[in-house]
Amino acid sequence: MSEQSRRDLAQLLLPVIRWTPDRGFSEARPLIDHALALGVGGFQLVGGEQDGVRALTKELQLKSKHPLLLAAELERGAGQQFAGATGLPPLAAITAMGDIEALRRAARLTAREARTMGVNWNLAPVCDLDLLTENPIVGTRAIGSDARKVAQLVQAWIEATQAEGVMGCAKHFPGLGRATADPHREALAVDTPADQLKELDLHPFRAAITGGVASMMTAHVAFPALDSSKVPATLSREILQWLLRQQLKFDNLITSDAMTLPGVCDGRTVADACVQALRAGCDVLLSPGDLDTTLDALEKALDDGTLDPERIKQSVRRRLKWAQWVSPPNDWRRPSGADTAWGALLADKVLRIDQGPVPPMAGVTEVALVDDDDDVEGRRADRTGIVEAMRLAGNDARIVSAPTPASAGPFVIALFADYLPNKGRFTLRDDTVAAVKGLAAQAEAMQRSVVLVGLGDPRWVQQLGMAVPTIHAWSGDRVMQQAAGRGLLRKK
Image 1 (cartoon, rainbow, N blue to C red):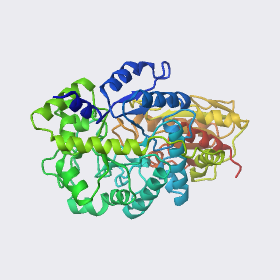
Image 2: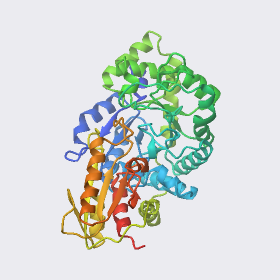
Image 3: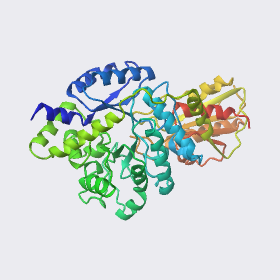
Image 4: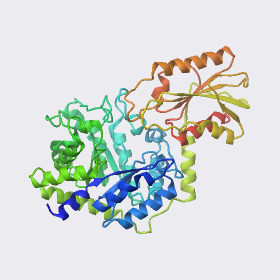
């Protein structure tokens, strides 16, 4: 095996660089140095502060022998990953406004902020349809449930993103909308008939292709109606080569989802899964496990004929084509003050109130936090945004564990509950329900009204069935917590 072949294979791997609050990117240094020496094709960035990310991406591009794809999952704005950038509401919240131009502006703002940090590939939008309440992972990440409407919005989002010089990524092909388990936790199959999948689930992906989407991310889910071998789509030649390449005429970059997830590794090593993914038709692999182990397996597969050398060359060419497309000339638009001001206001605009109106808050507002997501690995831990926004507006907001005589005003219960990777549930825990109802009963016993704030998909707080004013804030991200805090104080 030639050194060039190994370097070609390395270009198809994109390891993950994770930022930590205490050490920044320093823990990832050994991985970064080794990956650059091997000649990887890029990285996925998780977390960081705006200036630090900008410095890192510049360094990575300078040290690499070829232009890199630098990816991040920015479904909810650049602030979803990077402190200092603008956080945005989930796509479902934006599209619920019925304003396609708001969706385009959100995509543009995200792309402009990403480019200023050197991030050139947004792993978004989610093209999965929101079809099942019992789907534990899609929720507000989806644009909606109507295939034709979603298709139109997907195309608008992609065109707005790529007009700013950032690659879009339609995911998770051929669609996670019918999943009833989480591929972050287990292997799963969707048994829907092929004609139904092609008529509905594939519709947004067709629109993404029509819109010129740069990349498509595969689903770690088996679709027996599309491939009787029952392997996940990521490992299926039938789904990737025959359906996506031949029938749907997609000729741009196919990327896997993270190759370390149980949905694709069930019964096989990460390295073996990587071999099968490239053989099936993936061009690049996100989070490919231990780089040396995976590269050794890919080399062996190339030597023994499991991998076709011509297929690998095609993938190398595709990756390079798109890495050159996003290589930074300096004339891309930076976000303007008007862009970021609009983004900051968007969170307030998407708030929805049920069973209102919300009663006026007292000078002292007591807020109890109930967290249905506190057992989810990798969850967002910051839960102080509501009270901080209220204090900034002059209200003496306090986090309490129960109502006290310090306030006679409405008692606020903030419920953090959402569809999250690794959660594996679509219903509230019994102890969550008991906690919320117990707090409400205590407040009512003190003749105080109750206001609920749902920090997640509205379906979670609706499970409580409580007839009290409810603010739906769509997610537990800091930007939505702050918007909810302002919403509580808004004069009606």
